[in-house]
Every structure is written in C-alpha cells, then in structure tokens.
Amino acid sequence: MPNKRRRLTGQVVSNKMDKTVVVEVKHTMRHPLYQKVLRESKRYMAHDETNELEIGDVVVIVESRPISKTKRWAVQEVLREDLSARTTELEELAEVIDELDEEEAEETDEAPEEEAEDDAEADEIE
Image (cartoon, rainbow, N blue to C red; front, side, top):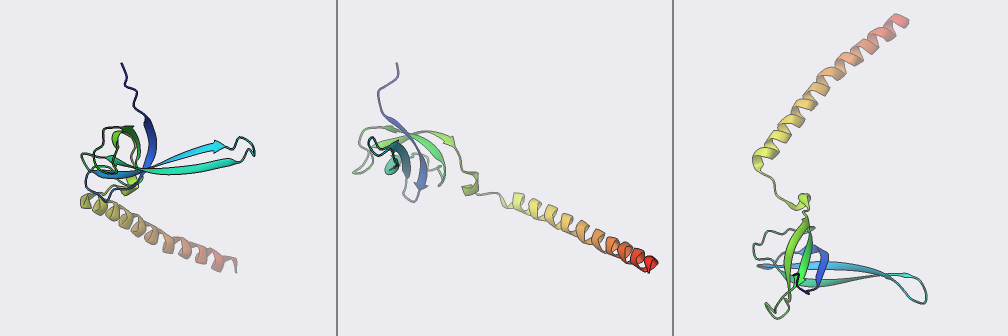
C-alpha cells in the first residue's frame, strides 16, 4: 500500500552543503480570469545521504520528518543525470585529445596535396 506523502519533481540547483541539495520545483498555471500563463518556482532543501547528486540532475523529492531547521524533504530517486556536470577520468580525456590530434594531422596532410592539384590544373588551363 503506497503512502500518502507528497512527491515533487525538480532540478538540483545547488549541492554545496553536506548531505543536502537545493531542488527547484517549477509550476505553471493559467490565471483563472485573465488567462495569462503564470510560472512559479519554489526551492526546497532535500536530504541527499550519499552526496552523489550534481547540479542539473532531475530528481523526485518526497516529504519526510523534519531533518533540520529547514530540511523537510528527502531525495527519493534520480530521474535524469546531467552528464555535463559529471567529472571524467584523465585517461579518457587523453584518449579523446589523441584522437583529435590524429584527425587534425590527417586533414593537414591532405589539404596541401589538393591545393597542389588545383594549382597544376590552373597552370594547364592557362
């Protein structure tokens, strides 16, 4: 039987605190009289026991008992990780740089040959 705790989906905007993340939940609604679309956002402090969340991750937070003065929510699950915020291994970066250097070397080797052929053709035409 599922519990009746509220669950909200939002994006992590800060992870500077220990075991705490700030999650921004955005809500859009239409004004009942003027029909204008209103956008609201609210920030919640949520408990992250493992300190593994990064800025940009999309998470589901759930109501919990009071954990501290301002913390009343806990991270339940991570829906989507922001890969741009994740750090990469130095070895992986070295491999990518080597591949790029090889591609540039191939391009520079091919370019003078093509220019020489174009020059030779231009000389023949004249």
